[in-house]
Image 1: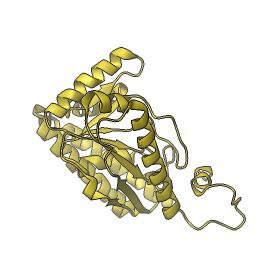
Image 2: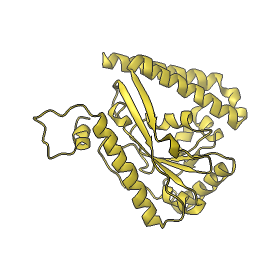
Image 3: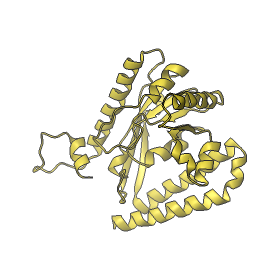
Length: 257
């Protein structure tokens, strides 16, 4: 049944996306239209997740949300993470890999919406270009959204945080709101099946500007990883007595993938 529900959702996902990408072409005339269309698109996808899969979400720590200029730095476990911020924030500018802007039609919307595209093979030139694009987005009142790990990670897995978030923090002098979540329990990075349940996204206290690069990165990683591990533990199913209790709960969850 879970496989069938997931298959139905995937049909809706691709059909709904293709339909709006074509019918929404007039929205490319302005950034506001692109973001309005994006909210409508993602609202439809989340409706389908709720109805077909039984997957909903809740947000904790809304008191830590800030008006722009601000950077949101989020844990990245699932495609779900790339969708939700369009519903939480006003006209977010995503920091993402350049290859996504090459996708026909979809890439046009990303670019017109103010996405900050990063060419990860270009070294220092890519960093300078990222800072220029991010600066323009901030000047236009857009909050920045970045995934410091640079790629999706399984629940319980840790990857080195990439330097882009530190560059934005130090060069732009903005507060950074860490974001923890447990979406990977329900929509896995390489899994077909989406599981019913409640994704929890937790906004954490902002890291104020002014820290050294090293202190900032340490504080950001500690904040996101500890809270994400906690959310995974709280949402995980009861552990069977036969399981090796020397492992942490997130490690056991990761091994189920």
